[in-house]
Length: 120
Image (cartoon, rainbow, N blue to C red; front, side, top):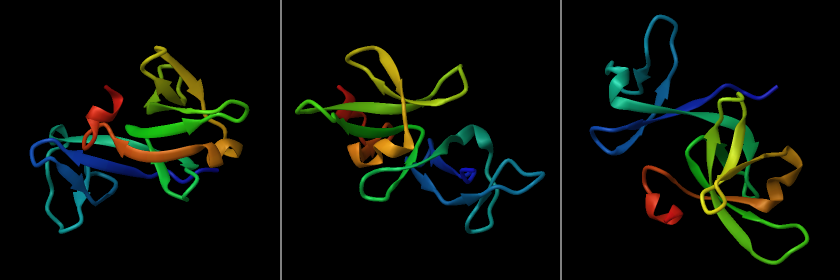
């Protein structure tokens, strides 16, 4: 079973917020101050790691290499309405399921908040 973990992007300050979930609160900042959830964008851990052992979260930009062909593509990790995380390739307009055994083929190279230009 994968651990349930989140990270949070502070839209007003433009940085990541270290946080823990606590029952009864939207979220708690690591320095003890409470903020409104509307200022943040939550991203959930997929339960998968990339080839370097880095955790892959929703919103990450991931380079996917191919097993039988040369080359690679960039895609964004998204949560679909079918209740699953997929690697979404903007140039193709399609999402592909992610398997744990393919971790050596993936590398997190950024995220949609800090590196949106990577997907253009």
